[in-house]
Amino acid sequence: MRIHYRQALAAAVSVVALGAATPALSAGGVEWSYHGDIGPEHWGDLVDSHGDRAYPLCALGTAQSPIDIPAGAAVDARRMPLAFDYRPVPLAVKNNGHTIQVDYAPGSTMTVQGVTYDLLQFHFHAPSEHHVDGDVYPMEGHLVHGRQNGDTLELAVVGFLMTEGEANPVIQGIWEHMPAETGSVTVRGAKVSAADLLPDSREYYGYSGSLTTPPCSEDVKWHVLAEPIEVSERQIAAFEELFEMNARPPQPLNGRLVIESAARPQ
Ligand SMILES: [Zn+2]
Image (tube, rainbow, N blue to C red):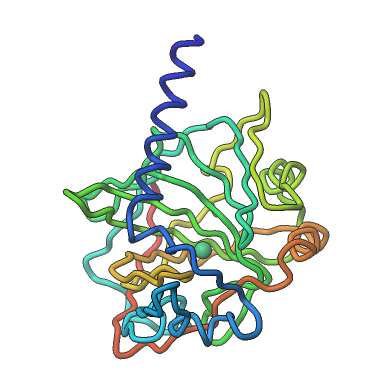
């Protein structure tokens, strides 16, 4: 048991290290926030210690996320269902200064269009980053998946919108352990499964976009689930106590196609 656990841990650490070393995921260390002179409007202009722009894509990118998803997006005739194979993992909750993030141990995947991605982590935004036909939701979660292809970590994100309603037991389990200050905690004996965060419907809006945080790297495959999940007013308030506003505003669509997949059982 112990050996297995350590092997799993080593594998988890290597995935995290991979992410940290990959420009697609790492933000070169120049401080940014959601407010004031280092807020979203200025991310593209922030400079490093050499005077070089640290996150130029945030300003110059033409396929940025999030977006306001246009209603009436065409149903994609080809239909590209999402297939989730998420396993329960030990609960590890991190406050990285920008959000609450749950790092995911290896072994859980999402497959779309015949390509399988590993679930790396999930995290939250308030209010929602994606809008749907102009509508904003109180929160949004992002399930971040990666697939190593040579030197490139290809990213695919599944977004889920969160609306006010019944308390969500999975969220409750995470919130009870979220660090108020920057730092992380592995909760002894506690497990979490991202599968329990998914709505019943697999219908989603798909488009090609970017990371919604610096360095705003593009070529991120986005799948925003159409059916929101419910969280309670108290759960929303508890997150907002730590992160009053951690959502990048919608970015120009610039002619990108948004597809709407038809619902289909797994
Ligand atoms: Zn996010």
